[in-house]
Length: 293
Image (cartoon, rainbow, N blue to C red; front, side):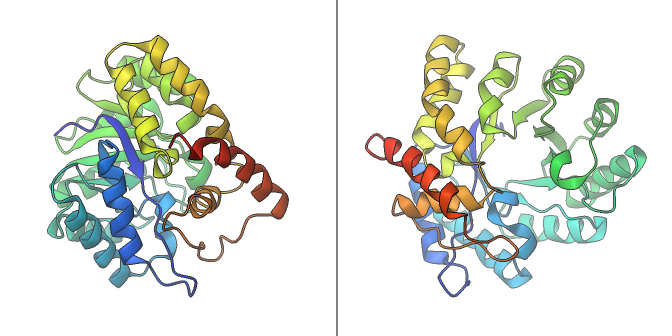
């Protein structure tokens, strides 16, 4: 199974009382598939995974898997800062029908590079399913260095990395030094096209929650080598790439989806409502895309 193109890091829609909106989640899943998405990631950072309860996790996975019905891969975010809990979540995701797991590097504990290696190898061995490594130092406090990633990638179950280090020099090293069949995906919407020009195979996108057809079109063009056409779409999307991160993700994208009349709802604390001035800036950007969405 290939994990290329535009893969959406799905929000978890909430009701006003803070409960999960499972009907809205199913609707969002159907909307994504209808608009040409290449894969779906429930329970990632954008899905507010740190505040999702275990019983909610199971039902969220079931909802997405059932609504998807095998049309695109479902890649469940299962990573935590506990190797034991990561294995538990990954095994459960497989039982519930997930096609792969997205495992973030452990946050807060700040393991050494050897600790990172052992974490991923242990989890991937126990899970026995495809694993995408998620490198995002800005949220975890630890960077997966390229030599460490090369060691991790030798495991048969570890097939890709979501690169959100923000370090383009490191990303170039990863693309240059890792095997050609190891997939590198952007974890930042605004550098998707630059990364794909260098050999990346797509993005795990936040913006595609709102604009799946546009982001999918850009990645498809890049995969086909039509970089001029992809560049035009990139610059068309650049204002929303920036506006969607004016405050902590997923606060802006959930707000934008609410503006567009999509299932979204509030975030759970400690994430909160956007500042009014930033919400107004976001609204002005979102309104420009609604007619052509």
